[in-house]
Image (cartoon, rainbow, N blue to C red; front, side, top):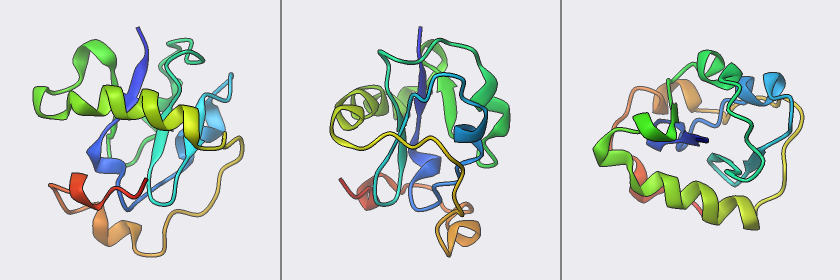
Length: 107
C-alpha cells in the first residue's frame, strides 16, 4: 500500500510532509505535491504532518478522490523530487478552506 496526496493540497502545497519523509518520495508541481507509489514505504509519517489532511493511505482514499491515485502515479514520473521543506504558496491559507479544487491542478 502507498500513500496518496489528494485534492486538498491543490493551490496550498504545504511541504511539512516532505520534511519527515525518510525516502524522498514526494514530487513537486506548480501548485500540488504527489507521492511516488514506487518509492513510498508506507511509513505514515507524512499523514500527521499535512495541515490540510490531504494525504491518505491508498485503501482509505475517499471515493470521490480515487482519481488522485492515478494522478499521483502519473505526475510522480514527470515532476522533480522535492527533498526539503519550502514555504507554502502565498495564498495557501486561503485556499486551504476551499473544496472542489481538482480543476485548478496545474500539470
